[in-house]
Length: 282
Image (cartoon, rainbow, N blue to C red):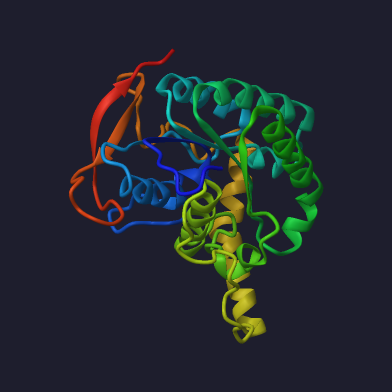
């Protein structure tokens, strides 16, 4: 990557990881690593534009069908694509289909932008991670191969111990905390050739392990509030993303739109954004 480069637009494609769950803001919306990254990029480039098309719960086929063409039509400087992990976490997963759809997404997105960013996603340490590790590593091997073939860059979060720390994950055990999202934004920032602000790999301070009773209470809360609803959605064919669209996509108009900083004259990361123009579906 070009060192200290400038970027004039960013489109983010994917699922809940890119939507920003569980980086919750006071107004009930989510921020997430893509928003943090966009705010920092905008501080370097007047007129910077951003669109986050990601929607929670989406499988790779849905990402390809609902988001990829929209992103291609926007002709962004940088596109981030993170998808397929929801597929690997399903009890039944057709990895051949996942490979084919992810390859389709990369083949369509890579020519439409100057820089395509792919990712080896982080995983929370624990028994669930061990169960699905072979599928995840198969997915990440494909990510590496596709990046090499199509000139994309890869942000490798998978092997970072800091992001595997359970304290980096929300109570649902599926999504990163605000600190985790900030670290991901820094990792992408550095992969884009920009000067480091900190070392996102720095481990959390050593802490006293929680007592057995506290761990069991957390397990029961997790099962009641997150695991059972997740199982219920799987059994009924529902998704947490049903009826939702990306933050910068208007279902009513059937098109995406850009946002840009409300005040380009304010130094530092962006606090508020305003909608500017639209990008029709191709």
